[in-house]
Amino acid sequence: MTHPTDGPPTPTGAGGPSPSVLGDDWVLGADGLRFRRAARVLLLDADDRLLLVRGHDVDQPERSWWFTVGGGIDPGESARAAAVRELREETGLVLGDGALVGPVLTRSAIFDFYAEHCRQDEEFFLARVDHALDPASIARDGWTEVELDVLDEVRWWHLDDLAAETREVFPEGLADLVRPLLGGWDGVTRHLGLQRDD
Picture 1 (cartoon, rainbow, N blue to C red):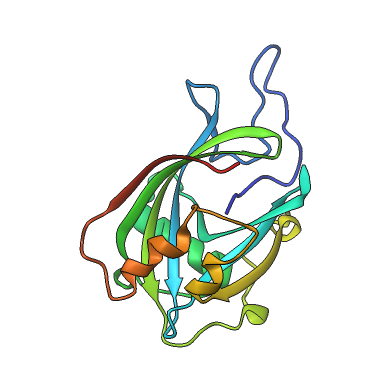
Picture 2 (cartoon, helix red, strand yellow; picture 1 turned 30 degrees about the vertical axis):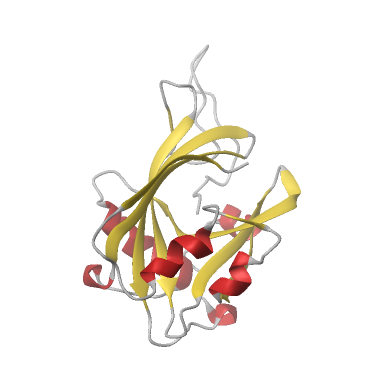
């Protein structure tokens, strides 16, 4: 999940770059793309359903897509700690570091958001809960104002239904990436490489 600031970018001086509306954790990389590191969680329930969030871009309101819980890694924070924090902020679910397995997947994603071309390096952790959270009761008090505007739905997905979903799902082929993890992680991190989410 992105963590944009609430207002438009503010100029930093004559001729200098403006901070991104995406937020302070996005920095301008040498390749000219906004960049950050992120941690994401593949959260499964006892029925092997995967918790996903559906959101849209304010610049493309007609387009929406499903993605995993997670977001930017704060300075000095480990990817595992960020995954635990993001899960708590976005769902209200509190898990200890030991409840997360992995990273089971990594990837770099290039996408457009808030009219900016972005690259995000992501680490995915696996976690399970015994009882499914009711999406209608998921705590949203950790969400930013912008997240409240662009996030549309939270839902548990059976993998067969997810594989048949007609809206975009990121990472691409997510159901097939999760299936081998249902019986547990084999200890090997799968690197998906660079993917374009557009």
